[in-house]
Image (cartoon, rainbow, N blue to C red):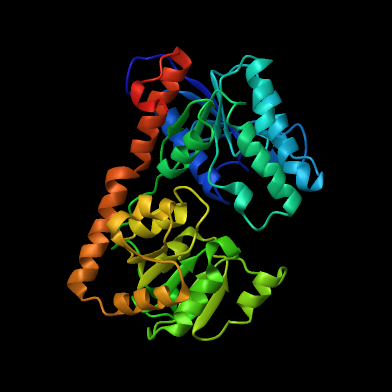
Length: 385
């Protein structure tokens, strides 16, 4: 159903592996936004990776999925794929929305040579992630700078990221903040049977959902848990393979007290783990509005988060915060001592934050309004930098 009588938008979303979402935050975001825009009468194409060329378009809830072959060029494959998608999308769209700045320079080409309106979502501080080689980090740091002038507009999913862009690149293109979203979870919709496979009791384990990377502070969380008096086991969800020295260090801590259960890709299983955790520890430090933190709040989890501007912006006063293993140990002791009334109060506050600021319908409203204004050449004052 159309929400208004304004012209139909023709939007292309690039920079994802495709939808339906089965991988990460960008894919979930693309699916949630695209399906809602289509439901409002707009035409949306989401670009998806393919192993071979010439695959026909497919459809998902009214969204056209355009399959583009990803080259097999090693580390450059993602950049080459994004460029191919940009080239394919240069006709028939009012706005191109690239997720991630790995191919930021190509957005300049699309804007200047092809005359397209191009948005670029910068996510978090991608260049600060340890998973990249020094050369890759240097490239991404340059691409962050390129993103300040190459597209028509930069989008940030955290106010702290938008503020940083405006401070570092005061003469750059407009930078707008629109958050990420999360669905509220019905506490009565999940039973606890699935927990038995990991030997867990409802409400009596500490949960971490994170990639095994230093900037997610997984090792510090393990150390803080070991120092504390909390008797609950620590459950770490993340695909930890003994590839890097950091991952081997994490695996050395595996025990009955520290359960490294690997990746959990079944949404029902992961939802069950989240919903019934005694608390959720969130160690991410270089992202914007992190999906894992939002999903914990949406479940009404008691949250202990790494103390940084991104996490404080999202969780506000509904979380405890730590910077060191000792501080985490103290937070865990406080959580274990919470009364049922205090725990329920924190749960309600967490869910209210999501309901007020992070619903997907609200996110779609903000995007639709800004997209319509951009295409019409009249960006509303609230969206200006």
